[in-house]
Length: 329
Length: 307
Image 1 (cartoon, one colour):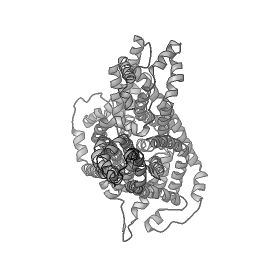
Image 2 (cartoon, rainbow over the protein chains, first blue to last red; image 1 turned 180 degrees about the vertical axis):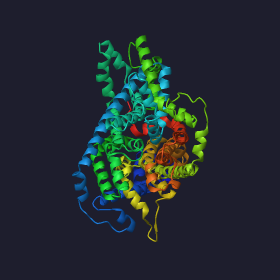
Image 3 (cartoon, each protein chain N blue to C red; image 1 turned 60 degrees about the vertical axis):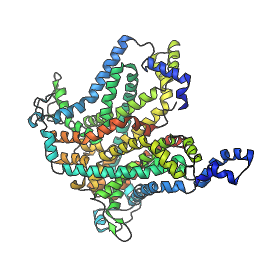
Image 4 (cartoon, each protein chain N blue to C red; image 1 turned 90 degrees about the horizontal axis):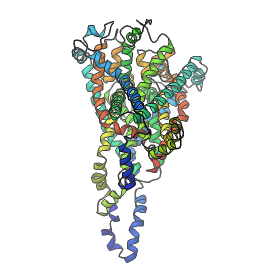
């Protein structure tokens, strides 16, 4: 159909001298828009169908489910579960355990994201300061950590913090006057959560440091030189020049970290052998255990809906940032 | 941005930047560099320690693994752990399952995603923004939250003439994984396609190409590297997934990640074979990751770095 656009086919139809020169330039973009009415939709159709079928429909089903009472009996018989209105939500929201889980998840997210981003930024700045060889070593080390599957990383940490044969206990025990033999890291929730946080921060730093380091190359050197000449301390340069320029990128990586860490599942799950105790439950594991452990599918769905709602603000922010990019090019 | 590279100013700026090693610090002292280097090396060693420890454990014989005083080097290195991992029940079966599921999911997502990306990147039409929005939103929906309805849905797939139970089958997870990696695939390929100048399309069309020919001869070959990077990332995503497959399928229809998870619940973990299994499972991912690492972050933060 687009062959019409080519001058060769147009000439016999429209033998106008000066007019003809003007027409192709104007007509081409307009024609493209008019002709492409159905084509883009046909191209996008398979993707949209898949997304609608396996993401959109389950999302609606999850909402519906949270207003019903689906238990094992309904699952087996295939009957429509009874409608219970907002009962599941009242039950969840009036449950002290649930609020404990929410508080724990939020606290973990704030602490772990803060540590990760500050460390990531620090490492990114450090990478600009070290010699070439050291920088290469740092990048290679981070690449290996980044590449490790989440589950494998969690298994390694579980092994390292094993109470009988873990290397962490052995190393701490070497310190004079400290007895850490057979120390169990998950008896005290504070200690257990510091192991989980260490794992999450350790695994999260490579993405943050390498991305932020790439962002730092955008800071014009002239600005920093000028600031130093004017007597700015390194701290002032960081606060008044580097951080403002880095801000958009910093916002995006922080948002992503919040989304990822808020959904913490694998690390808590693996480190607690697939049976997280109440003090190690996060919103994700709590919803999962309620649904698949206790066969309270509707209650689990209600918790999942609340989780998504709690994340809503952060998600909208991220989507707005990315949307702007997608619209531009 | 492409035009900038050839401008003399940019050339000078690049040269200058290279001269002083990309450092942002002005008037760096030698002592400062030594301190920074030391901190950098300590950081790298700390980061690598768990990786070193898993390798160290995997090559130790059983009695050395469970020594009260862990050795920092296997005194009698052995492949026993790897052999017992391979011999462990379902290990090879789950490995094969993983390969089949992953390849299906990646190939499907690539075809479907490429067409979708083409629509968003090359056409301006009513509804384009809505599609972009959908792609972005579904990328953020925690898949774990959808697991409950997904499980119920796959248990009872109504085709009109018959109903199928797609749980405990490779087909169900394969399709699920396809959708899992689809949004990212569309979004990343969109970036690669819009990177190809539209002028190329137009020039080809003036020379008599049809739309389909433009697609086959211009866009597809030029998106080649992008397709590779995207599919590798999709591979990693699908290969690393274990929660969905662990919930939907029984052990003989799971993948290696789920195998690693199952292994821990048997009484008393066999740490040596587990760590060896973890290494075997990670190898394809690590290799692929190192190949395409440059492209991964760009997909997530694309555009934010632009000057």
